[in-house]
Structure formats: C-alpha cells, structure tokens
Image (cartoon, rainbow, N blue to C red; front, side, top):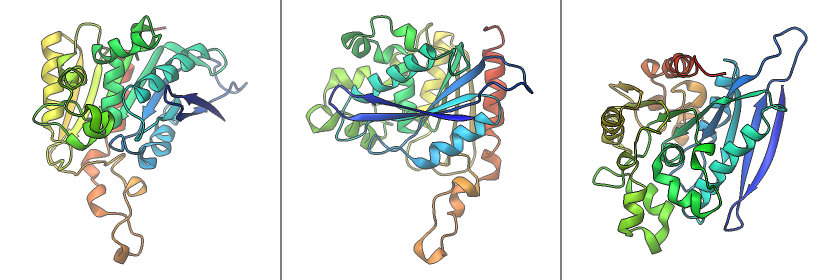
Length: 285
C-alpha cells in the first residue's frame, strides 16, 4: 500500500488535497486493476469532515478499492471552485489509471451531506454549464461510473439545507434564482446520470429526508437505476455509524463517543453499497 498526494489549485487560488490509498502490485496476489472510489466528505461547504474521510476510505480499501479523498476548498471559496476541483480529481484518477492500478471505467463517487451535493452536481447535468465554462468541454469524461450518496443535500427548494447552499454561494449569490435552479439536483437528473445508491435516516434533524425522496423520484422518472435505503432512526452525519466514527460526546462525558452517532442498524450501509457497486460494474472492464 502506498499513499499518494496531489494538490489541486482552485480558480480562486485556494488549494484542495487529493489523498489516495493505492494497493500496489504483489507477487502473492493477482495483478489486476481495481475499481476506484473518490470520497467527498461533508461539512456544509464550510469544512471537510475527518469523520467522513480516512475511516470511509479504509473501509472501502479493505474491500478491494483504490480509494481517494478530496479535501476540497470550502468557504470563503464559492461555487464553482469545489466542483472544478472534484472534476480535476476525477480526471487525475483516470489519467493515472496505469500507475495507480485503477480500472478507469469503474470509478465511483461517494459524497456525504454537502459533499453529496457536490458529488451529485458533478455526476448530473447540474454542473455541466460551469464545467464547460471552465475548460471541461466534455463533462461526461469526468463523471463517475456510479454515484453513492449518504444523507445528501439535494434540493435548493423548500426542503433545502439552507446553510449549506448559502455557504456555497455566498452572500452575493445566495438568492440568485438561476444559480439556485441549476444547483437543485432533482431538476437535472436525466438518462446520462450514472446508477445511484443513496441512504438517509428518516429522523435526520439537519438535512430533511425529503432531499433523498426527491432524488429517488427524479431518478425513477428519468429511468436511472437507483437503490435507496431509509433507516428509521439516526441523526445527521453518522459516517459509518460506529463508535470509531462517532463525534466526541459532551465535555462531561470524558471523551466518550456521542451515543446518538452509534446506530447499529445503519452500520450495514457499506456492505449494501459494495453489493450495489458489484452489480453496477458487472459489465465494465
């Protein structure tokens, strides 16, 4: 295993960090290219969560994926800085397919919360205009082959997580009707959208589950393959929903994990995602 690091400079001069966990060739194992996964942590476009970074990457690395984390630029950077960095990260992964032992037609994109919104913007027609404007003349070339979303921000409408959208656009553009329409993902699902896996909790107090329900309906209407899992309980930002990825509890809890972040019923989602990916990639080289 080796760790690769790349710096991606944004159009505003900010920098993003791409970190990869790459399994190298071994005489003891079959020397074949592996599927890859690019992970976009959440954080309301104000930061990128470490709870949704390395623990997620290592979970999928153990399952045979070459995994990459993009710690993209957040506020004060504004749209489309992070989108262009995510597109560049996808381009780098495919461009280094031989060196990083990646199957370039089996690259998944996994986003959490606001990172889910960023992932969905790249994977759908929502981001096409901005990509073309900034030199990605063929947006399909940087789209993932499968899209995985965990408690994602989807809509800019009545059920929006307004803080994420406002942070992404900044005070100058947070009420820009054209931008809000472009970044409302459910309005831009079409036949070119890759297969979608999504999960959410019904009791999420931060990003309403209606975001995911709107995504499911849009995929269904467009004929896009979608697998959705709605868990009856659990808060927002669960990551793996284990003790290892739980937020620290209150100061009086002596560093114990927040019990609201440990939800055994949710812990199955990585296995469900891997089964989904096996099916989505079954006919790909």
